[in-house]
Length: 297
Image 1 (cartoon, rainbow, N blue to C red):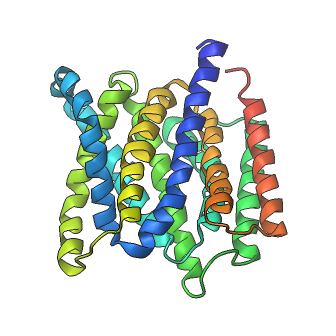
Image 2: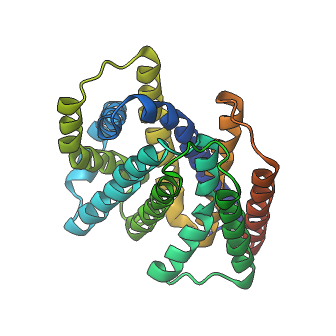
Image 3: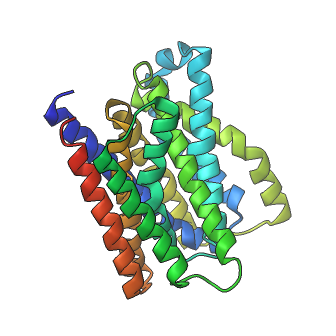
């Protein structure tokens, strides 16, 4: 892979994670007003409608998918969309959006470790510095103070959000398995469809148990979450993650907490403490170390 292509792929990954970070802020509002499974299904329906023209143009590719590819596409949809959003939205009910964004700072470490264990991509010594700084910074922020976290359920909410981070990492692993044979757009169309099928039964239960009338703000958030934070983000990510190492992809995931924290301060007016800022600095140092170690790809 050429240096120019590597930079292009990395830029795509960073843009995708920045959009994913914005979903943390949008999801905070939705988590407080609508049932989680119903919200997830609604955003996926929006995404599927947006993707229908692509699905029609790619119908030959979709019909030619092999059983193995369908399996990995289903796993991508289940882990990368359903589990990620359900865990994230449940966690956001007890954790502030800024705090949640910082917890997702463990994403580089999680994806690098998963790539090592499941893909055999061993990190270098300098990548280890990235992992250490990232984990130390995120853990310090989580344990220092509540920083926007409501009383009660602090540990549980944090665990749910970390589970969402692991689910997102597994999504990238499953994508890398079939990146050479399934184009990014086709991949996104099918994984959104699979995710919607997986979540629809629980969404119907939510609708029967908790009938709600969404506000105009809820509708706007669902449209953004489905069209931008899902379609655009997943096409960008699936189009690039298969062409870079797990370390590089892990580094790019740091754009998600950075985006979430920045938007939380700008949109939700959530203050960041000195301890949290110091933790962010450690996370950023880890990102720089990881980027430097991957410069020769």
